Length: 255
Ligand SMILES: Nc1ncnc2c1ncn2[C@@H]1O[C@H](COP(=O)(O)OP(=O)(O)OP(=O)(O)O)[C@@H](O)[C@H]1O
Image 1 (cartoon, rainbow, N blue to C red):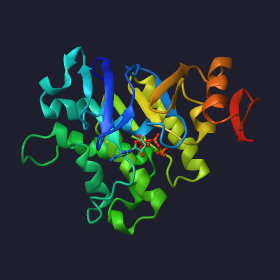
Image 2 (tube, protein in one colour):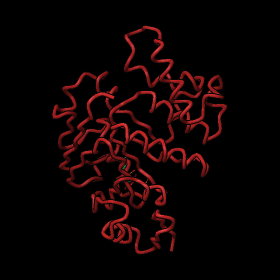
Image 3 (cartoon, helix red, strand yellow):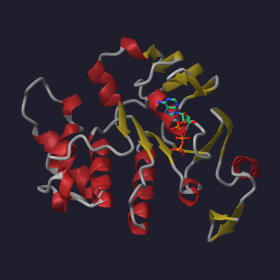
Image 4 (cartoon, rainbow, N blue to C red):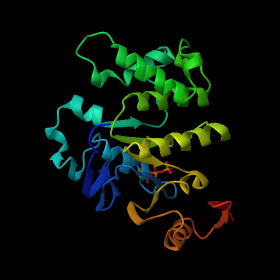
């Protein structure tokens, strides 16, 4: 992989349709680590993630490798930061393989056909998410979980230095949730800054770092085993959790 990405967001605030959604905050995803953003509904998790993609206007600054985001050519930005959003369905009529190939667009010359390297990246990403077998089927013909694995493969095929995923486990069954964890961990080990918004606390507790949000603020950032992290989780989830250790892992039960 290329040099680790230094993506840094310094927000003075962010409003959507005139409504303040994020308070002043700073966040710089760490290369080589998987950060899970957690918090109650409406806390601002997805908005924070979208701010990191540079897709939302806000009062503040986003920099990549210390250079302001708008100063980067769009293709270089798209190569550096990959994004898996929620409920993506614009490409319903494309085959799964073509959808994943969209992840290679930032690597391709204008109107040039995909290279052998592009095909290899697509095959590798689809193998990782076990979606290669249905590469010829249209996205519209896939189940929710199958489709999610194709979209995850598209994000992986970018081979970006930052990987941002909003509720990536949507529709995934338990074994494929575990596979996703292994993919996130492997990406981080390879030097990628991995950030995911997750509602599944048991999965989030396997991340390297938890970013706990509430009411448009980051209220805590820490390791999954830290007592302070557990206290922050209890606070934002109204003390309705039971956080336990089992087989060297932290798990959270609804209380
Ligand atoms: N287009 C919009 N206009 C105004 N307010 C919005 C808009 N989109 C989202 N919001 C508000 O912004 C706040 C943060 O939304 P966001 O989607 O970031 O929360 P979240 O933490 O990801 O929530 P969830 O867990 O429910 O997905 C919410 O209160 C939401 O109602």
